[in-house]
Amino acid sequence: MDNLDAARLQMAFTLIFHIVFACIGMVMPFFMIIAHKKWLNTRNPIYLKLTKSWQKGVAIFFVTGAVSGTALSFELGLLWPEFMKYAGPIIGMPFSLEGAAFFVEAIALGFYLYGWDKIPEKFHWFTGVIVGLSGVASGILVVSANGWMNAPSGFDYINGQFLNIDPVKAFFNPAWFTQALHMTLAAFTATGFAVAGIHAYQIYKERQVELHKKAFKIAITFGAIAAILQPISGDLSAKDIAKRQPVKLAAMEAHYETQKGAPLYIGGIVDTENKTVSHKIEIPKALSFLAFGDFDAEVKGLNDFPDDVKPNVPMVHYAFQIMVGIGTLLMVVGGLFFISLKRKSWWQKNWYWLLFAILAPFGFIALEAGWIVTEVGRQPWIIHNVMRTKDAVTPMPGMIYSFYFYLCLYGILTVAVTWLMTRQIKSLNNSKTV
Image 1 (cartoon, rainbow, N blue to C red):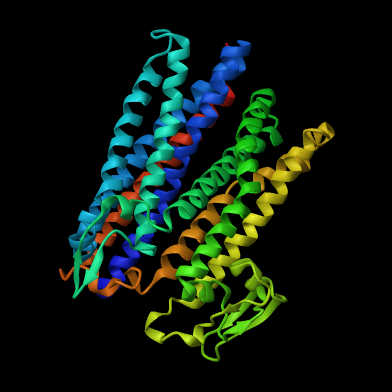
Image 2: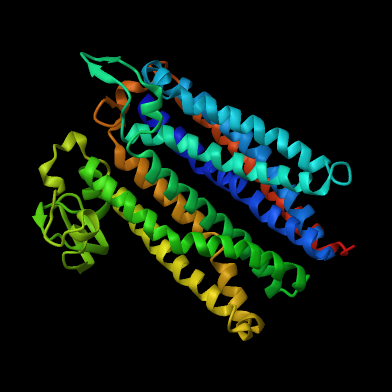
């Protein structure tokens, strides 16, 4: 395996793991503070028990997210020194601000974890709010840097040099808002359905039913609202990609021929040799409308682009189909949850809880698929239309050993988190409400 493949594999592997830790760390504080607020309003001991249980989960994912995120930050310099050489001065601001947000989050979390019965109740609750807001801010700042890689701005590229650098313009690049919105909603959808699914399974098994129903309702409310809003952010993202990265759009839909009134493909098997897609469902003119707001708009096909600027079409297409398919499923099930608030009889049926238990991992599967679309769809560029990934990789040999090291590190983190969370759920089920 050459350096480029080893570096790409390592970066992909670590991102796949870190994004799960990061999203849970962003979202779970909001579940915690809602339960805490309900405790303050009702003095129901179940909400206090739930709050203290969820705060342990927040602490666990804060630590693992910090470890995996720090390791990931070192990778940028280790694997992609040429990229950091030029990009560092341009997108350093969002990374430095993310560090500040992380620092604020750490201080607020310390107040929250150790502030019980020591600081005023309202201030104690407010420190939890700061934890949640700081986590979301951290995520948005990092996504802004990624958006810059897809829509580079804030500099002039002249004769291979990056000149006239404007960090503020780079931060507010054309892709930052749509990517940040889509990613934030995806984080709430994935985490909301995952946490709700875990509690739904406990209800299905008839363990601490009253507590888990309250926990389920808090988590799924966030997840369902985010899932229902997600198509709006997806539409904004698709229109942005159609304008700035037409080759990525063509790969997402596996469209090889340029045409007006382009159909939308649902499913399909990509044949890269013959440049065709079989076993697909076509919705006439839908892609033209979704991408440009015009049923007769022209959509460029992959055949209009040189081979050396095309991404891996099957990977991007299948990942996009998975993301959209699961997103649609979660949106429908999110709607069913709100219907069930009127039809309370569903809450007495095993099928209802089993449905949400089965769906627990689906949001994160869609999340991972979405990142594959974003990252693989940009290839062969590390900075779109400016720097190729192969020109950014380190010349130092032996990167495969670095990959093995990170494989072990993230494997240990995964085992540790799984053990800690399993123990936490057992402890919650076995403890008495006081």
